[in-house]
Image (cartoon, rainbow, N blue to C red; front, side, top):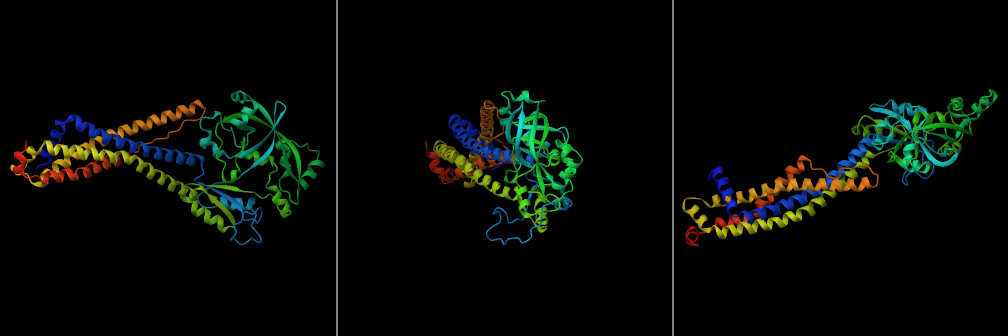
Length: 458
C-alpha cells in the first residue's frame, strides 16, 4: 500500500468517530502537557541558576588562601606545613602573571561604625572591584554603581538602608561618615607624628606604605556619598568574605588600610615585610581555564577553591530533578496510552467488514498493521503538538503567578519555566513513539482477522 493511500485512509477513519478520537487525542495532549510543564520547570530553574552564577562571575573565579596551620583549616590527613608561603603582594603579582588570569585582587571586609546624622550604626563594609559592575546583584538597583574605582562613594544593601531611613530612595546623594580603625606601621606613625600630620581619611593613610616591624591601630574617618541601593546582596564568595551591608570601591578600601580580623594572624606570626593577604580572588578568562590556573596556584604553595568543580554536583542535582519530574509527568501520558488502545480496539470491532474488504482486495497483514499504526501515530503527533503548546502555556502561567507573588513582596522577577527546542521536539517524538507502542496490540489483532469471517460480520 502506498504511503499516500495509507495516510488518506488513516485520516478518513479518524474523521468517522470524531468525538471518540478527539477525546483520545486530548488525553495524549494532556499527558504531553504535564510532561512538558514538569520538565520546563526543571530546565527553567537550571537556566536561572546558571545565569545567576555566570553573571556573578563565580564560575571563572578562584579563591586563594595561604597554607597556614592556623584555625584548624587543614585536613586531618594532611601533614602540617613547616614554613607556609605568605600570601603577600609578591605572590599576588606572580599569580596575576599566569596565563589566562584577568585580574587578582584581595578580599577586604571589616566591621566598623558608620554615622548618619550623628547616629552610630555598626555594620560590615566590603570592597568591590570595578569588574563587579556587571554582577547580577546590581541589576535593577536604585541609583548607580561607583563612578570610579577609587571614588569616595558607597552602595548600601536594602536592609541596612531601611535602618537608616524609612524611605531608602531618599538616601541617594546623602553622606555618611565611616569611622574605622586604621592599621599604621610603627615607624610610619612616628614619621607622621614628627611631621605634624593630622590623621584622617586617605591623606593620613598614605603614610603607611613601605613599613615593617609591627603596627598600631589609629582611629580614622572617611566621608562617603551614597550613590546606590541594591535589593540583593552581591555574591559573598568563599567563606562569605565579601558579605556586607555597605560596599565601597576596592581601591578605596585598600587605601584606607582598615584593620581586619586576619591581621591577628600576622601579629602572632611576628613581623614581616609588608602586609599579608588573608585571601585573594583570581579571575580567569573563562570557566575552562579554571582547572589549569588552580593547578599552577597550588604548585606555588597556596590553597585554592572554585565553584567550577562544585557546579558539577549542581548539574547532577538538576539531572536527577529533571528525571524525577519527567517520571511524574509521564504518568499522565501512560494513562493516555490506555485510551489509544481502547479506541483502536473499538475501531476493530466497528470496522471488521472494512478490514475484510481490504484483505479480499489483496491487502496483506502488514498493510492492515500499517493502517492502524498510522492512525495511532497521527493521534500521537496531533496530541504531541497540542500538548507542547499546552505545556508551554502552563509554564507561562506558572512564571506569571510566581512573578506576581514576588512583586507583591518587592522582589525581582524570575523565569521559572523554559521550553527549549529540544524539549518540544523530544516531547512530540515521545508522544508518537508511545502511541505507536500502544497501537501494537490493536494492529496485530486487526491483521489476524479472517477475511471470510470479517465479510460475514454485521
